[in-house]
Length: 511
Image (cartoon, rainbow, N blue to C red; front, side, top):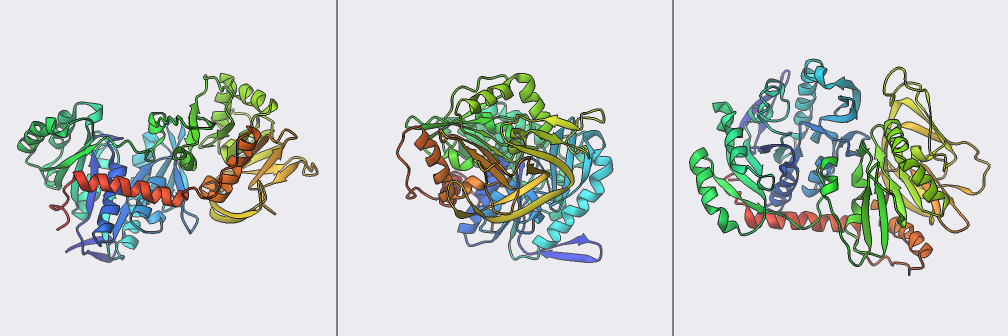
């Protein structure tokens, strides 16, 4: 039992020693291993509580109180059997480009920061936000499962590192070091990381996990022996390369997320925006064997997919300009003109409109940037970026492709309006709400979009949306007997945890 001074004049007793997942580098697999540990402990009868002090990601979730948090912590929360809350990720940095990030504390936007000024301007406030988040979560009867960020031994940043060893020492956590053997140099990764730790930091490392191993594990037995001898730290196990499709940790992993469905009947093309956000909106499609997903980057040919999705963007105007410069905007307009189906989400919806106005420079590159920006003009809407960010979970009745209740969340500065709302051919997706519109043409092709993130997680609505595309292609409609998206996610989490439990020995850490 351990007591910590969490905030001024307040001490909290920690009943269960926290576990912390650190990595030898970014992308080592910390997030998914922390996710697996949450489900593993849940199976053992414990209540795990996920926590990442600071995350940098444009893949976000909005909790029940309308507060932003990283999607990876939401996924860990579901794995733990909990409702996601912003306290699980008290500091979220959302990159805007040009070495600038939006700063989110406990779910609310508190400003922007240049990378060069971040630690000087935001370190103290960030640490206070982290302690406030901990103060709330530690009141629950459970074990904290902490996830680090990047490498814990970036020597030029270590004195201002909010979310790795500073947090581990603060909570006296038992730490696991994860090394990705797929990247090569796994011995140097481990030895170098530990060598750069101070003695009081090294003592916290209680185990090592080798991640993403391909082939016969017995070939690495001598490697395990060497690592344990050189470090004095046990190797908890070797996690194999998992063939199942798991959510990528960030946009850097997206293009590695290859999907080949030989039985696919329709192809969905997705624009890989340079500043793509909330790509988790697309997760429900990746596990559908009837669908082939294809990423299209600026400079590539769009081709002739059955439907095109333009996802969200953290910097819509900047990404639109890149699409224009690369010629991809013209390809999208030609595709729509010739009967292609187009659907935009949030920033993708805004790009489809006639104009995007930025009077408060929420999205402008610099002070000389144009106030008025021209969109693709294939949907009769205009967008103005305001000073207030709209973040909330929504339950709405949608009118297209059929009438039903759906849920999702909004997270945007821009507000869009119809330019001419007298045109009867434009369908408002939601009654009394500017959350989305669609135009259905005589040939039954459609152009539309919505501000509602997570819309494709609504199984019935997604099925009706897909059936629109299948009908246009002369295919039979699909029925609602398909596995629900929630059940698919639970199945993936169980598959991940099964692999973890089979290969990793956690007994030393959870006594």
